[in-house]
Length: 399
Image 1 (tube, one colour):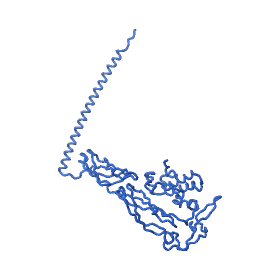
Image 2: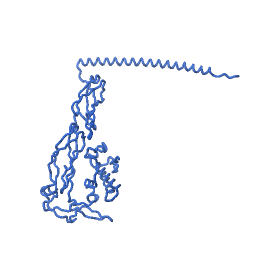
Image 3: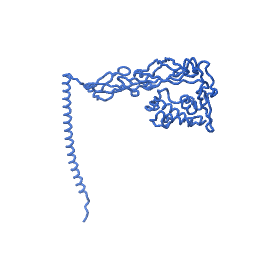
Image 4: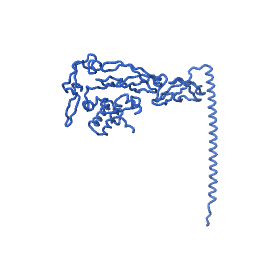
């Protein structure tokens, strides 16, 4: 079944800004949250649908791809949108659920356990040829990783104590009417512990810069804005938690002679008057080298010729796009005496040809006019005969 439009799901206009989209999602998350609708399958599906919509529209790059190409534009951006569980939703949008429920979407969880690191983005520039043929690239970057000296706690060894405000639970409770809510302790941030002295190596952050070098395989046919996902190559986790993912975002460099339109490549071909009139076989540079292209006789400027299967590969399939050649007839700006004489002879021949066309057209018009006049006279003559015949066939009446 086709998915609903994400803007329709959140109830916002296509021109809505980031704040409006977040506000709309907060409202739906509050309405359909599973803790507020226990056992309600309809509410669960609505909660997941709203979260999926926010996952796309709340991300600038995904939103741009969705606006241009719809759901198909998201296929190369780290997989199809969606979540496998409620925990994935809560961990992805923890800031929103912390605002709504205190922490973790209303589920009682202490923050001093393992925590997954954040996802990171690496912008990778590719040439047209690399995008078409695929490539293996080595990426070098720095990422925050768990501090090995404090284990991600941010505290100097032995300088951690139980939080006096929440008594080490990481949670404080408050009542609103008949409902009791649990929220993260503001004193310890939900960890249940307070740092008496910060780790001297990471300054209390729990993370230190780490240099990474990873190899990534670029699939043939990747387009501008496409995303590749490298699992657990993002920010390091805290307290033994897994690292986040690294998303490699492709930026296609401009090419001096090519333009990309989907899976097709477009280039320009300049030809002479003689080639356009007589036809020719020329060499055209493509992504895969040089290919021969036949220019038919009488080719006009502005026409397009096609080299089949010389464009970008279609990701996930064996098919390729085409190389579309836009033809431009080049007008010479300088002529030798011999060339000018030949052009003048050709112009004279063209004038004679046009004169013959006009003469033939005049003869044809005269013939048609004469035929029309004769036809008029024939119609009048036949009409008189038919009227006379009709009068002669009338019956006589007795006086």
